[in-house]
Length: 351
Image (cartoon, rainbow, N blue to C red; front, top):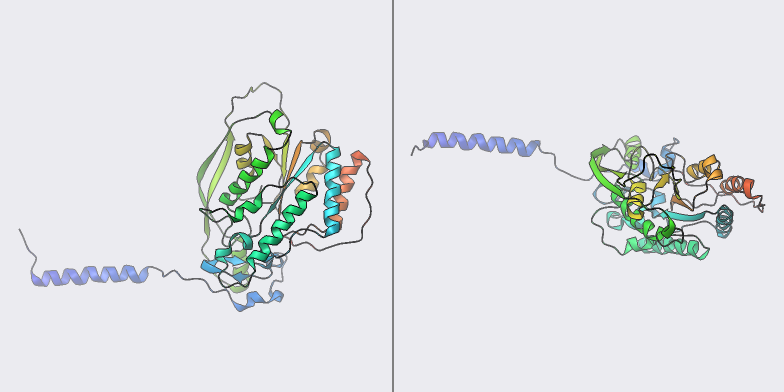
């Protein structure tokens, strides 16, 4: 066996040690990004985009939150609930039930990521549950979203630096929503189909909160990687048969249909075995997709058995102009009147 000389062993030790140190020193040390003091000043949110993120706060592990993530009141005023109830009544006259999916806020769902942010999570959760119960008391169909608080989740339901839910969050809400849909009277008589969801790689994204922080502070956060899902109909279908109009229509925000697809409608189809028409809209706020659908010939000629309205719960739903528009569209066919009301409330907006 051949042995290296003492000098050779010394040179080799020095060589490999230098390589190890070079690799160690060139490897970045992970540390939390500091959010600048300017983020605390509302005056710095001086563009239409930044106005949506008043005011950014730094949580744990580079999580970012905004004021609307940290609400302790949910739902509209008493008048607002009455107006919602009137919309439900008009929809029922079209043969359509309304199922509302009030997406919980990031603050009440991601409590462990709040860090040192001063926020009463329990008060927020109680207020959110009261909102769900108030909707149910007034006859609205609402999934058991409050069960999200007591379940152990293997992943975050929301992004660390974006206002959308993750695909995992969309999937969990879709499961609960599907359970509720399957309890409705129309469901047993509706044609069922088979759907399969697949994962098709992943993409990187710059979150909306992250982008706002960069614009104000110049902060540099890592992009988040998200899996890409798609759901396909794998039923044996008669290609020459009549086209069946979907009994369920989904309207909502970019959480349900946007540049980034979190596959909420796909998960809904998988868990309900129903073909669901997804007419959600990106950039239209909570009302854009709903208004567009109600004014369409699709609704006028073939109103669905169930209208699923996905709406982030940071919206207060107090806008008088919104209710006027909806009622005008619905009463055009029903001929029902609407009592005037002077209340108006500015809504929190989101891209």
